[in-house]
Length: 120
Image 1 (cartoon, helix red, strand yellow):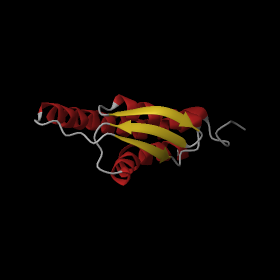
Image 2 (cartoon, one colour):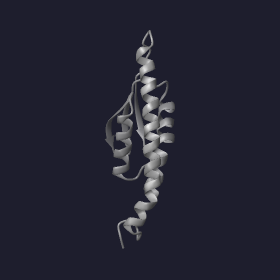
Image 3 (tube, rainbow, N blue to C red):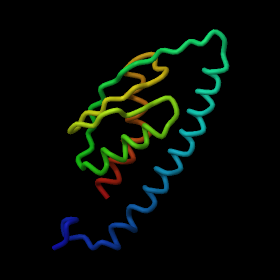
Image 4 (cartoon, one colour):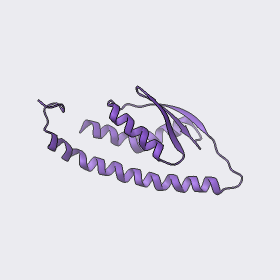
């Protein structure tokens, strides 16, 4: 029996490849959007930012998936993951109107795909 619960390694990776490509393409799109939003924010006058610290509880089970989520967040302009302890990520957002909005965006755009990757 393998670590993946009896599934063979190559088959498991073949099932994960389309999800990984989908996550990568979603990240690239989010990267472009975040860059444009940050450029607009910085070039606007007067500068109106709403910095916020967010405590984000993830439903990801593996430490690897949580670390990947934190990395994706940190690589997106305007956000930074400062700490990961267990299931909780401490995130700084340069411009977020509310915790709920920021958390919803992360869940919808990154975490949902990472959950599917964990399950595959």
